[in-house]
Every structure is written in C-alpha cells, then in structure tokens.
Length: 434
Ligand code: NAD
Figure 1 (tube, helix red, strand yellow):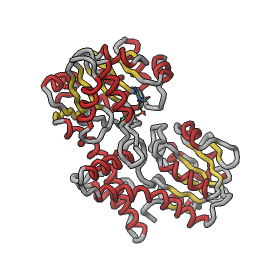
Figure 2 (tube, rainbow, N blue to C red):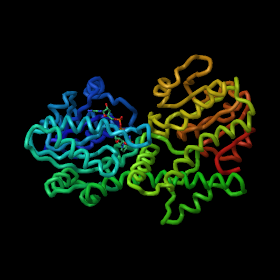
Figure 3 (spheres, rainbow, N blue to C red):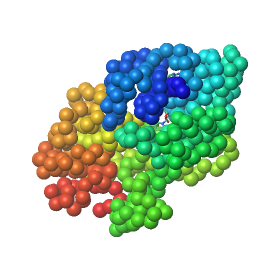
Figure 4 (cartoon, rainbow, N blue to C red):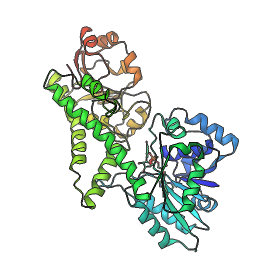
C-alpha cells in the first residue's frame, strides 16, 4: 500500500509521520516547496512536542519521504489522505477552496483505483462534492472511492493522540475502501467505528462543537458565580464528579480559540442553517465565547479606569499551552483592544511570540516582546494571564510585584490561588470566583 498525504501542516505532518510509524510507506506533499525543503531536513515548521524525533526516525528508515511534486505523489499512491486547510469563510462556512483544488488535481492524475480520504475537517456531505469534482475533471476511466477519517488530535499532544487514539472513525460506502482503511489502522482495530460517510463527517463537527458548548456552559456558570458567592472552580469540580458529565472541558476562562473550535462551530451552524435546522444552541455557544474577551477587558478597566498610556503585561499568547499556534487566540483580540485604547503592551509567550510578532510587530514603544514573564511585567500597571502555561505557576510573584508599577493581576485562566496572590499584596481578579 502506498499512501500519499497532501498538505503537511499540523495535521498532515503528524498524519504522515504517524502512518509511517504504523509501518506504511508514506509520501507527504505540500504545495509550499519551502516547507517541504525544511521538513526533508528534519525541521518541523511549527512547535509540536515529540514530532521531530519521530520524523527523524521515519526519514532515516526510509518509510517516509516528502515531495513538492503533487501530481507525481498522487499518481504513485493508492490511498490519498487530504490534509489541506478548511479555514473559515466570510459567512462563517468552511472555505473549501483548498479541498476543491486538491480534488481537481487528484482527478487529473487519477491513473488507477484510489481511495481519497478526507482527513481535514469538512462539513457533512463534502464527499458528494469531492466525488462530483473528481468525476468532472478526471481524464481516465479509473475508479475511486472517497472515505472520511476525521482527525481528533490536539496540538501540544498531537503525536500521542495520533499514535494512541481514543477512537478512529472511518466513513465509507464501498467494501473495497473499507478493507483498505481497516488495513491502514490494523494496529487499532478495537478502536475503530465504521459508519457511512455523512455520519463520519458529522461526528467530527459534532464532537468539536460539543466541547465548545461545554466550555461556554461553564463560562455561563462563571458569570453567575461572579454575581453570587459561588465559586466556579468548585462548581466545575462538583459537576465533573458526575461521570455522566466528566470534569474535562469545564474550565472557566477567557474562552476557546485555536484553529478548530471557533471555525468548526461556525461551520456547523452554517451547514445546519443551510439545511433548514435551527442552530440557536450553537449560536449561543459562539456568542458566549465572543463575550469572554470583553469581560476580561472590563475587569482591567474596573481596576485602572483609563487604559491610555498604561503599560499592560500580557502573559501567554498561544491559544493554549504547549503550542505556538495563535490562530483565533483570545490574546489577539485582547491585544488589539488594548492598542485601540492607547495602552502600551509588553508581551511574553514561551513559544508563540514569533508568530504574534507577525501580527503585532515590535516597535519598542507601544509593543514590546519580553524575554521572560517577569521581564514582561517590568513597569506594568497590570498583568493579564491569557494562556495557562505551566511555567507561569513557577513565577516568583514577590519579584513580579516589585517590578510592577501597580500590583494588579488579572488572571483569565484561573491559574493562581486567590488567597495566596492576595496575601502577597496583589489586587487579583480571576474568572467566576472571589
Ligand atoms: P495547516 O494550515 O497547518 O496545514 C494545511 C497545509 O495544506 C499547509 O501546509 C498548506 O500549504 C497545504 N496546502 C494548501 N493547499 C494545498 C494544495 N492545494 N496542495 C497541497 N497542499 C496544500 O492546517 P492544519 O491545522 O493542519 O489543518 C488541516 C485540516 O485539519 C483542517 O481542516 C483542520 O480543521 C483539521 N484539523 C486540525 C487540527 C489541528 O489541531 N490543527 C486537528 C484536527 C483537525
């Protein structure tokens, strides 16, 4: 079996490396030649713990190679994993241009039976469009199948998630495709759920939207806690002890971001509405999430009144710890709002600072990137915690207090113990607790 992986971003590169680790012969291809050049040299174009070691092993063993020759890669493969981007379009729907482009390319290079596997997150019924596109543009009589195999990896623990998945969803409509897909994942036969293609596609959007719903739900409870004597951390703990609910994704804060939850939620809302389904529940999930950033800024204003010419330290820029990904990170909207208010910002993140520099370049006056979290708080009138990086827990807060102009700490991730921080002399504001 020869596997091609088209698109070598977060998902594609992990998929290529993971499938090689499963013992298959894999070629990863991307239309960005420079990216392929770097990966061939064993360089990972983003931060993902453990991926470089596995990539190095697979390259040395020869089970994995990379190419920027997409047509040749397609022709040589009998299974093609499509891992290109499906970013958010202007109207909230998933922008399927990259999928359509790859489908045409596959059609033009269809030289024998192939299974085209949707690995990217796509709206339900995308396979119908892929099949139509390939049929429209193919130049041979060769047969093909489309399969859906959504990816559930999480950035930051992507390697472990791919190699030891909770479940593998395979959506197929032919026995031939089913057999091939089961062979690819033979190692994890006990974790495979085979469905039809629409079901598999919907499982991915339904899963991400449910997790987003859980986060917005606890954030709604946090709003109630802020107006009462209830403590959202304990509310979440008490709820999570019920195994029907579970404790994960019940963390109140400044809301979810990243390249998946916000866009997948909006894409599901859009496809639901297009199909005539009332999607109000998920619209509220999105609305509650959007409001989180404003809530944090309101806390800041309640502490400092006017933000013009105030210095604000922003600790954590990535949308979550253990990644350098800033796509849809709440920090972006916070930084923009602070700059709009005329504040000066001092930013720190252990991995994501370079990515943020591209959005908000350092000017040495309004925007400064610090080399450490403590340095970011130098002269600050307040510090905002936007990402729960574990290293922030090791911060010497007495030292930080000495550096700050005003010891005001606004913790958007409930990282610290309120009593301990207040005992050090900070004015401390967190989410849904006193
Ligand atoms: P990404 O932007 O990191 O990677 C996409 C890659 O596709 C890029 O390298 C790009 O150059 C390449 N590409 C675009 N058009 C191409 C073409 N025509 N031919 C070849 N290569 C092309 O995106 P990602 O984060 O890897 O996400 C990919 C898909 O997987 C999305 O649908 C996403 O929703 C889904 N997904 C992402 C995650 C995640 O945590 N990032 C998790 C699960 C699912």
